[in-house]
Length: 116
Image (tube, rainbow, N blue to C red; front, top):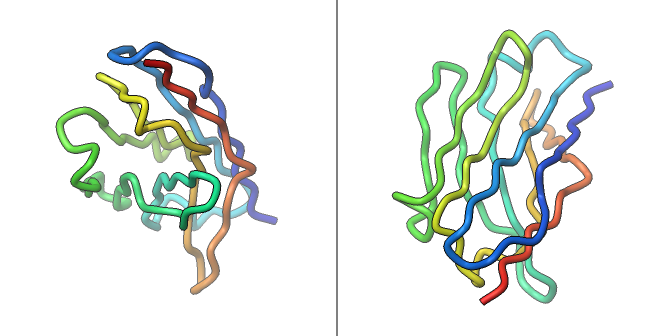
């Protein structure tokens, strides 16, 4: 069974940094698929933050370009999200995602709160 476990969230002041991690397990095919980070604010739809292909090619939402960096370690089936220059608008629950065989798997989420 595919399992995604996020960690690294917390409370940080505006301008600060956090690094999120997502450890994936349960399938040898995870490393062959795109993994991503999404976020959701209560009352709003979940939005893509960044994703990265199995080959390491990243794609970012315009709102985080230049501030966030996604990376992955295929040997460890782990994806990271380095978040710098955080803003209060980045406050959200952050979720890790992988799509396998047309099915979306999600982690339980980790809360990021940025104070002004």
